[in-house]
Image (tube, rainbow, N blue to C red):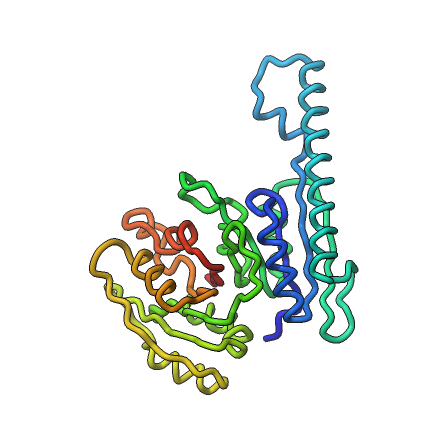
Length: 289
């Protein structure tokens, strides 16, 4: 399926230029329309975080301050959007461009970002999101988790500072036979067909079932993609650490994998590979759940 619509949240973790720049780069390559979504917090919601016993004057001051901050954030986001479009040569338009010409639009709304991402994301072919650059932040943001769990769409997660200029030249696929991994491969077919090198990393996990890495190589060959396979055996450390080591060995600039292939309870008990990869991956990760 062709990727013609890309959604990129600009608030929260995506306040850095990396996700927007990556979305515009990918959009240029695919001739897609990029919608930059900026969500401002409703000033009335800020009062709930302050506490009880406030006078009406104090409430008005809090709301006025929140509204001023929201307006400043909106102004910065719009300027960043315009600068990035100009730099990437993407035309600003509310509609898709003719032929394979990329276009981009800026949408501003008021509310909770995860709510709008859940709704708008379901009609996007690809969602591009950022991740925190805080080493102490061990969990994905509400927006990122919503994009992965509640839209049914593939999500490209971009590390801080990544421009995605060479994204998809060398691709690594984390394969464990799961439904989620299969969906990720399907979502990445356009990138896989254009890649110079594709390696299927078969992750050895207890209880794994489904097609093998060799089956994936054969499937990709039917789509005109030449790929090789490599077994990843976890001897020390976590699955994610072994996977990241293999990604570096392959000099990959894009990792394709299924997201949250374990149940929520098993993730709480044993930890989750997806979360570890999101925290530590040096390259963009294309995920599907």
